Each structure stands twice: as C-alpha cells, then as structure tokens.
Length: 257
Image (tube, rainbow, N blue to C red):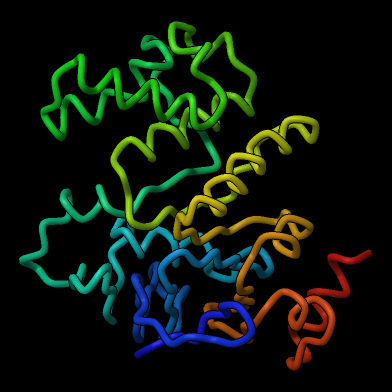
C-alpha cells in the first residue's frame, strides 16, 4: 500500500511507516475496533477524532501493543508487531507514546524521569543519558527544570517532560492520546507549541485529541471514527468544511457549537 502525500504543487506516493490492516478488538461482548484499515506516511501528522467510545484511544494503544488486538496486522517500518516472534520491547522504542496522564515518578527529578528508560532499558551510561536527556528537555523548553521534581511543575510542564522522555528513545512515530485533556486551558498552548515544533522538525505523529483548532491548523489528514469504524478521512479543510458522510457532518456541527 502507498499513500499520496502533498508536496509542493502536487502529491507524491510514499510507503507508510505505520500500517494497520483489518484490526479488530473486543472487550468481552463489546467490539471496540471493527476491522480498522489505517496508514500513516513518514513525517505525516494524522489527527484521529470522533465521539467518546468510538475506539480512538484503543486504536492508538493497539498500535504499540499496549492493548493486544484480537486479529489483524500492524506494520511499523516494515516489521509485523502481531508476529509472536516480534521483539516488542525493541519495537516500542521506535513508537513513542504520550498519555493523558503524565506518569512521572514523583521521587525522581525531571532529568531522572527523562533518562530512566535510557539507562535501564538501553543500558546507556549516566553521562550519556544525561546528555541526551538535557538535549530533549531543551527541545521542549525545560532544560532549566532538569533538577526540579514533578510536584514543582505545572501540568503543562509535566506533559512536556513526558514528551521529552519519549523523544529520548528517538522514536520513528509518536502517538499522542489526549495529551492536553488533563490540563487547565491556559496550559494547553505550551504543549501544542511543542507538538508544532515536532511537526516542523519532521516527526511522524498520530494524535487523538479534542483540540480542533490545532487539528485544523497543523494536521495533514483527519480521520473520523465512530462505533469502532473509520467513517471518513481527508485533509482538514474537507473534514471540517465539506465532509462527505452524514455522521461526520453531524459531529463537526456539534463541536462547532
């Protein structure tokens, strides 16, 4: 499969870096994902939107096997994550995840949180891990907070630390699951600014979020999900201004109120 990606005056065909085929997931009798086909091109920013319970977060969690899908295929950079022989720990280092909750260790400094996985999982020395960690913190505007503890940071700062932690593993793809929903409104902008910077630097991202203004401005493609299915997808101007599907039109009208 190849994707058309806008470039200059036209479009180029590229192979996806992340490709999901026929993905299904049940929680007991509830079918949450109903044969999802989904692909993301390198350096693409894809926004997944839809009503609560539509399967958006479950799709993200299946993409890095935090949830085990019941059937289907998940290819990351050509490697099949559903293969029983797949080294999941190695592959998860290539697909970073930022959650709604920050998941920082309160007893570790900011730098300690950011470097923990590099030292424990990758076996890097403290000196090397600190060097990479400080560079990641600088990238999210928090190098001056390296010695602080999470309790001394705002929610927006804590989420930016979580982004820096994911960046330290040099992922191929970043998944964001409602990264701003736990933040006070005045703190949302600082996190979105970091995500804009990542986009401009060429990071491939899949974002589940209700930040529709950000989706309009920054996304290459919008995917609308409902009831475990992808109903419609396309560029932001199509989805928000002229959606083809009646369910998409109803959702867009509701969020525009």
